Length: 364
Ligand SMILES: [Zn+2]
Image (cartoon, rainbow, N blue to C red; front, side):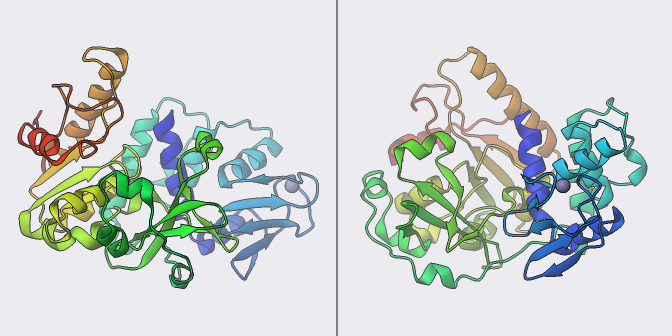
């Protein structure tokens, strides 16, 4: 289940090094932190030497003795449970992590052999607790030093200029170029303007099979961040969103840049989720701006009305509507008129097409 994977990634990336240390401590790892690295007893295979390392920049463990491999926090839990002759699934491991950090309401929710709770129930619970405890900053967001960006070149990027993204907008968004990995560098800022992550659009065709967009790795550091706990471009568009009480939510960063290019930076009311999920946390961020209407402008994920993809896609949008429409008005820029091509964002064609789809946006 893709969504579960995305959520588990978000959770994993949001854990602070101290939280991971707490977990290792609780599991008997006798951990110590130094320079964003934790060293711990090799509880992964029941060993005694302190050769289990955790790297906060990649959120991965590496066991330098028996296991001699890298794995994430869920895999660690699976390994430890296995030593207790308890084979657990990834889903149960995620549940364990959520419970351990009190990301769910209570720890009693966690029962090893309980497979009755659906993934969605677990995740909904997780989301509920996020919005309830937001003030306590249960999800500690990590910020990066932005000085790395100052040293990157910012050449003209013909590929994006040809798609209608203006140089002015690219400069304002701090778009740079990574000459090492050969990719377009897209800084992500939290609403407070701090650098929360950097993503990169590869320009190497062969790399695209692993995803066109990935966390940037610059000077040996990975600038990943939990995508579900931020909205791209909100740092730029928040004042306009507050003023117009409307927000347009795109999937990709590029759509925000194109929107600002077509309608002007001063009228920009766009954000991007960098995927096709909208989390309760993100809706909360928008509610703080007194938003009255959320306009979903996701990519067209079907070829023909009525085909299988159409069914899956419309169900997903209906679910989204069901979840958030009690909180705020939700509308959809949904292309029933075949104005867009498959997988187009509503902003990918010209201004007129976007305006038409905007005018015809639907409420469920
Ligand atoms: Zn090991």
